[in-house]
Length: 336
Image (tube, rainbow, N blue to C red; front, side, top):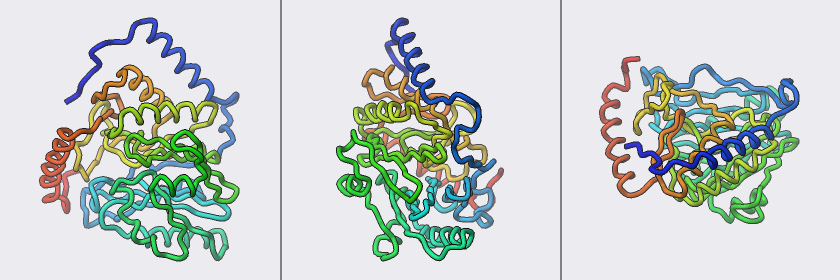
C-alpha cells in the first residue's frame, strides 16, 4: 500500500523549499571539474545477487573501491538481506564496518582481506577494529567472531560505548571522529531507523557510508521524529562537503523506477545500483518536510519511506515467508 500526501504544500512554500535546497546543493560543489581532490575509486558493474545458481555463487563478494577501501557484499544465497560491509584502511588501523547477517564467516574473510593488504604494502601488521552502522541483527550477526579476540578492537553498538569510542560529546547532536592514521572518519549520529544509527564520512574519498538510513530500497523508520531530525542533521553536515557517493547497506529496488523487490527476495537479477547521491538525500529531506510530521509510506523513484508499526511488521513477516518459501525451492537453478 502506497500512501500519498493528503494536503499539498502551498505554492510559495514549495518555491521557497526548492530555492533552499538549490542553495544547499550549491554549497557541496567545487569550483572546477578536477576530481575535487579526492581519492578516486570504482564500483562494479554488477554485485552478486543470490543466484541464479547458488551452488556456483561465492558467499562473499570483495570489491576493491581503491587500494585502501573495500566493499564486501554477502550473498543472497547465504541470507536474503544481502548486506554490504565496508573495510577502510588507514596508516595505523583498519576497520570493518558491520559483521553481516545470518550464519557467516566474516571473521575469516576480514582476516584474509587484511593479510592480502599487508602483503601488498609489504607490511607485517596493522591494528584491527570492528564497528557498526547500527544494531539490527543483519549487521551484527558475526559479532561473536570478534568479541573475544585480543587482536581486535571491538566497539559494541550501545550508545555510551559509541560515544566513548568516537568522542561524541552529546548524542545525537555532536560529531564524532575516528582516527585510522592519516585518515580521519567523521561520525554523525542519525537515529531513527534504529536507536544507534551512525553515518561515516571519509573525506579522502568523499564517501558517505550511511547504513540503513538511505539506500535504494525500503527506508524503515522506527522512530519518526528522530528520523526527521537525523535527516536534517545529515543534510546540514554535508553542506560544503564533497560527496562522491552515498553508500548504504542494502539494495531492495529494481532497476525499474518505483519498483522494488519484495522482502525476502534473495535473488535480484536486475537490481538498482548501490550508489546514491546527495541529491537523493535532499529529495528525502524534502519529502519529510512535505509529510509534516505524519508517518506515511511514500514511494520515491529510487527508494520508499517505510514507517514501521505492528501491522506493517506482520505484513512484512508474511511477505518474507511467502517469498522465501517460493524462491528456496529454486535456489540451485533460478531462471535468470
